[in-house]
Each structure stands twice: as structure tokens, then as C-alpha cells.
Image 1 (cartoon, rainbow, N blue to C red):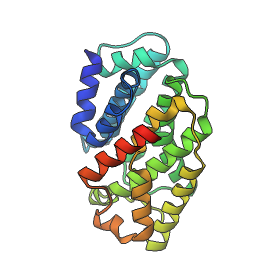
Image 2 (cartoon, rainbow, N blue to C red):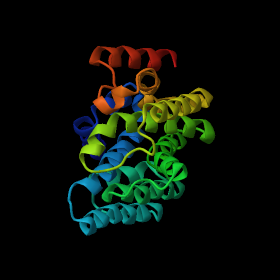
Image 3 (cartoon, rainbow, N blue to C red):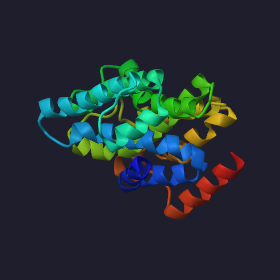
Length: 246
């Protein structure tokens, strides 16, 4: 039942990822739904309150839960129960880094530099994709992380208007040239990420990555206008093509 609960969390909060996971084999869904339900929970933990101390406590709750999972214990929670079935100690440790990086979302400070920004994308996107691929038997960490980084940049560019509306400073360089440089860097990472067969279900999550990054490269003004993304029909056609042909 915890898998069903995780699927509902993803469906309600992240419908595009739900579609991608449903395109994966059933055996892979049992890994992907808990991990991306966790992603929903930890990504919204900093935003459910304006009280920074409470937000910190919510993030810490997930860090403590992952520590218990790593030790073979757990707490009664539908997502934590499901995570306990798919994570080993190393997987739980990796996700702890994701929790720690989510603390940036609590505050309004800008990123310190490019290294800080890249670390945020790595921990919140690339690490998550690698944990999923690793749990499915992949050994191509570097390639999966490149895919995850590119997907993270694409998702971040889509989120820029919302983040700005919440008084965050999401970009180091918001000029058109800066946005194009970021999109170009992510497209290069995407092209270099040659994955193994085991990782394919995990990387389906990024099925829109190339199109979104290309949109930002071709017309960076779409980022600020909130005009990045695909139509529902295009999403389904693209996802079907990728799931069949890779």
C-alpha cells in the first residue's frame, strides 16, 4: 500500500514525472515511485511555512528518517516505509546530501558562485537520478549524473518565474547570454551522458530535458516569461518514442 501512496503523491504533485514513471517497467516503478515521492516531500518541506526554524525542522526530519533507513530501522510513514524497501545504506547516505542542499530553499540568499549553483543542481537532481539508477542495477554513475544535471537545469529554468515570485534569486546571470550559456552547458552534459540499459527507466524522468533546454537556447526570454515546456500531446508522443526507442 505504501507504493500506491507514493504513486498518488507523485501523481498529485508532479504529473510529468508520474507519466514518465508509468512508462517504465512495473519492476522499476517500485523503485521510482518511493524515490520521487521522497523528492516531492523534501522539495516542498522548505516552502510549507515562512518560519525558518520550522522549515529547518522539517528538512531535519527527513535526514533523521534516512539515517534510520540506513541503519535498517524506520519510522511509520508511507514514504519512509517504501524507501526502506529500495534503499541500502549508501543510497540513504546519498539522499541525505539532497536534504542538506534543500536548506538553500529556506532562505533568500543568492548562490555564492557557479560551484555553489552546480552543487545544488547536482545534489537535488543528479544525485536523485543516480540513486534511482543505482537501485535498478546501473553502474554508469558519471553518465547518469550528467543526465541528471541536464534535467535539473531544465527543471530549474522552468521554475525561475515561480522562484523569483517567492523572493528567491535563482540565477547567477539572468541576462539572455547567461541563460543561453547555462542551457548550452546542460545540453553538452546531456550529450555526454551515455547510459547503460539498467539506467534507462531512471532517466525517463528527464524526457523533456532536451526540448526545454533547446527552447531556452533559441529564445532565452521564454525563461522569464514562464513559457518553457511542451504541450500535453507533445509530452505523450515524446515519452512514448523515448520509452520504445531509447
